[in-house]
Length: 161
Image: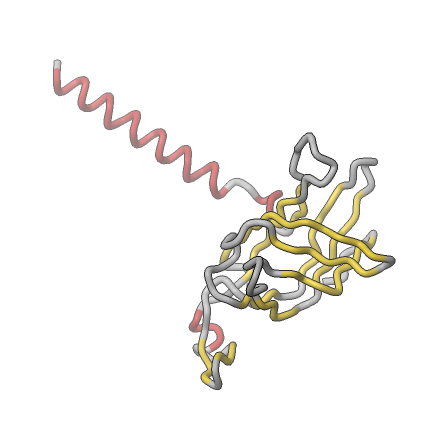
């Protein structure tokens, strides 16, 4: 009887693990998206989800310069190897749009982040299909708030990148 229970438990464990793998890989609609976060507050914020980065072998370990030394950092810059997500607050002044992270280490624990150009799919509260366009930029962590701020963003009806 113990063998049957152990076999059944092992089978259930294998099944549940394989389902999780399938679910994690079966999320194509979540790449390069801007998702409104639900909250009672008008100032709830957004979840910025994007795929970025490349393998070290694709840049020869020389794609970014830090303190005068060329090196590679995973999950930054051009490519689509890593799925990154961070909470942001959007601010618009005239036509200038910025996005400031609200989670301190959502993107990286480094003091800088190399963001490639991306157009994030977005649907506003009126059902309009838009894109938030983020130009390629190196952003540095604010020394007081520890947040990153992306600048030069724009909303368009078609992706720019």
